[in-house]
Image (cartoon, rainbow, N blue to C red; front, side):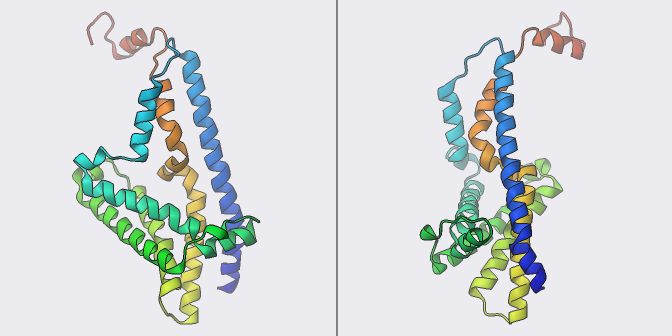
Length: 235
């Protein structure tokens, strides 16, 4: 167990962090390229910048969503805040980054009571999100099995981390939970560029790319008519 823990905290952590960083950078660059290619093909080069900014801020701070899904929206925001702040500002995580990668931000880390309470809030928010997804027909219809598994995986490091930090256990039990905690964090890093969670880096570009892409190229309408077999007909 000790060897596995050292491997997870050392080589595997560095590898998973590199995969996450390079994978998200790749997605970011590809999004930029797609946006500029769409601009090149579009007859109308202009985009409604004010509208794009409004949509982007609307996704970052989904105030309007409270009108239709107030509970789900509130819980989702709480979960996202906890998911980002807790691991990012935890002292032990900053120390791990310092030892493994060579840089950290230990000077702005959270105190233990604050981190423990934030972890608990994130755990409960994640469980509530999962239950809301399971009980909503609309959400179930657009969700895949991996969406539920991914949400469960995101909660695992918070549960195991809270047990290691706030629950008195036997040394062997503590080491088991700590190993699961580190391994689940490594796997999240590895999977992040290949799942929906990549929106954490792509969200600022999503509306800009969409505005670029929905500029149809010349003769696009005629080509669509041919594909649908509706040439000369009103669609």
